[in-house]
Image (cartoon, rainbow, N blue to C red; front, side, top):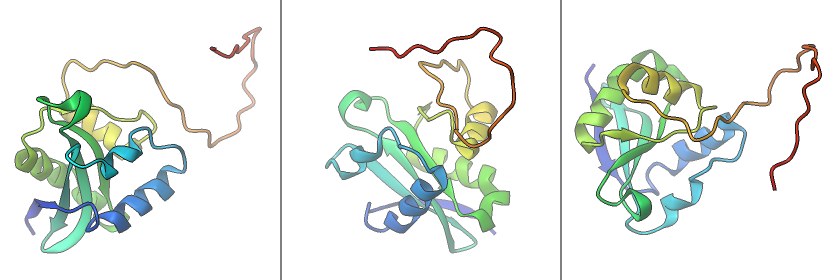
Length: 144
């Protein structure tokens, strides 16, 4: 079963994006650029002919002249093929940069596997588990 990535419209992958946002269960930082004409190229991912997910490459605004992978989503039933699908996306899109939210576990695995010279502006943690770790005098202050 060959993995493929083909350019699609934002409307064609909308159901995948909705599932992605539900699974992320948080604010998606660059969510609005999918609706900005000329800013994003979307790819439908397929495995053996079946729709498996999508990938988005930013090409407008601050990403002009440096196509950057911003989103990568694979349906749970196809995640065992995520690496093949990611390679197909990279080959089809010619993107050579990745920008991602650190709380996106699947995309983080792709970043750690394929990227070099990784830099982090900020780290977003997933608020999911309650711990009983002691604060040891630490104090969190808001940045204004």
